[in-house]
Structure formats: C-alpha cells, structure tokens
Length: 387
Ligand SMILES: C[S@@+](CC[C@H](N)C(=O)[O-])C[C@H]1O[C@@H](n2cnc3c(N)ncnc32)[C@H](O)[C@@H]1O
Image (cartoon, rainbow, N blue to C red; front, side, top):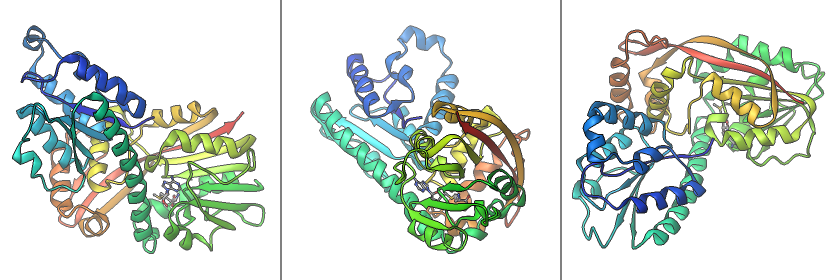
C-alpha cells in the first residue's frame, strides 16, 4: 500500500497536452502510486463528456480526493474545477502540491497563491524533467514531515494518552491479547505506546519488549514492559526470527503498513504468531466517510482500513491468517477532548457539520449532543502466523 496521489487538472478548460500528463503519471509512479490515472490518462473527449453525467465526475473525483494521501494540482491554466478541488483538499487537511509551468503561467491565481494553509507547496517548473526532480525532493520531505508529525503528536499526548479513549483499556481487547500471548517466551509489542495493549500479559512467563518511535510514549511504558526501545517499526533493531510472538494495536495506519509488517515477519520466528487489533471500517462503503472523518479529527493518520485491507496486508507480508473477528466499542467523544487533541482550530464546527450530513442508515451510528458525539466503533482482531 503506497502513497496515493490525486492529480487535479482542468477537464474541459485549456490544459497541457496528454503526453505531458502521461509522462507525469509514469514518472510519479516511481515515487508514489497514482490514485486516479484514468482521470488524467483518459481525459474524456468532448463527445465522451456529453455522455458522462457531470454529477458522476464530481462525486468520483471527491471520493478519490478523500482517499488520497497527497493532492497534486496542475495550475498553469485557470480552471474553476481545479480551484474547487484545491479548496476541498484543504478542508480534508491533505498535503497540497500546486505545480505550474512558468512559460504558460507567469502569474498564478491570487486566490490560490494567497491560501492560508501550512501544508500547501508551490512548484515552478520549466519542463517535465525539472518538475519530476523537484517533486522527488518534496515527496521525501513530506514523508519525513509526516513521520515527525506523528512522533510529536504522540510525544505531546503521552502523559494523558491512557485516558484519551475508551478503547485504550478495553478489557475484551486486553484479554484477547493476554490469552494469545501468555506462555510465549519472547514477545514484541510494536508501536507499543504506553504499553497498555499487553498490560494483562503474565510477565512471569513472558518477557515483553516494546518498540515505539515516540520517546514520550516509551517513557510512560516502562512499568508495563520488560524492555522499552525507541525505534521505528519499519527498521527494527532485532535479529531475524528472534521473537515468539508480536502484537500491534492501532499503529499500522500511522506508518507504511507493508514495511512494518515485513519487518514483523522478519523478526518473528517460524510458526510464531502475529496479533493485530485495529479500528477499521465495518463495510467498504463506509471507508470513504471514515477516511475523511479521521483526516479532520486526526490528520496524522495516513489511512483507514477495512477488515479486508488488514487481512490482505497480513498475507502480502507472508503471514497465514488463522482467524479474524469483529468487535464493537461504543465511544463517547466530547468536543472538549477533540479540541484539546486536535491541531485544527475549527475542528468542532467542521466535525459536527460533517457528522450531521451522514446518511441515517450509516452503521457507525453517530449521535450528536451538545457536549460531543457518540458512535459505534468497529475493530478487526486478527490472529496470524508465520509459516
Ligand atoms: C494509537 S497509538 C497505540 C499505542 C499502543 N499500541 C496501544 O494500543 O495503546 C500508536 C502508537 O504507534 C506509534 N507509532 C506510529 N508509527 C510508528 C512507527 N513507524 N514506529 C514506531 N512506532 C510508531 C506511535 O508513536 C504511537 O505510540
């Protein structure tokens, strides 16, 4: 699962020729995967446009924007549609990259140039090679920034982390981990945070090592773990096949899940078990809502999963899935808490408006109140093995 880039370009207005976009897409694919190659590659001809309903193009594009990690707009030519999409990407807290060819656009739109948003980046280019070189540097920087922002988010949250959500100390999840881990000799908790997930494991039988890249979280974890190490889950400082079991709770969506799971596979011994517990969308149809909602309330998250996504990720890294189950927790989120843990100042207004627009048959059951909102949170608990 790589970074997804949505490319916004004029559909009907004057634009670069097709070969420019084809080259951009194929070059970008080497530094990122492109979310909507069809929108660029198969730019509808005038005849096709007359057959496509504009509402379909509109909703398809908004869906792609919501599920992308990076929003890239070609703004050399004025386009109302691209301007609208930029504004949408900003509402969803996406990193925005605006590229423009100086020979077409000596001056770019003032309303775009003047956007007050910390995560917008402008790239001037002369030709496609110049552009790709500048994009590679920026993607690298954005990746590092993302890692930094996750780390500092958890560093800040660490003193109060255990009390921030209902699920942290949920007995059913903690019991599930303990039952599966008890008796294993060497256990690794990846993205261990304050060590809560393995808090009920019998430590007389099991040595628990925790790894997290947030020093704040590691500091808080010391009483719950035997060894606590500051490291990146994507680059583990352990020998191959060292651990009998590994647990991961609520970490994969903050990092590159493929790399982290490959590392877990590497350091697990043959036959060892991997236990993962993650909040996920109950149905594929709800993924888009959850991705958009989480980008608002917790922009550090890179992505949201369905149960199927999580199973595929396990398998892609070589694990054999033994079983998986759904679990639900009723959550109460107060506006006060949301405000205190969010970087977005208008979070309360945006989130309440967002929830109010949900279809009534939404299975997440959002219920608004003056103090906050309640909803039903879906979890995927997966038990897999290295075989
Ligand atoms: C939501 S917390 C979950 C903590 C703990 N697993 C639990 O269930 O209470 C996510 C944790 O993952 C850590 N994390 C995210 N990406 C990481 C990475 N690439 N390497 C190590 N830790 C990471 C964060 O620092 C944070 O402590």
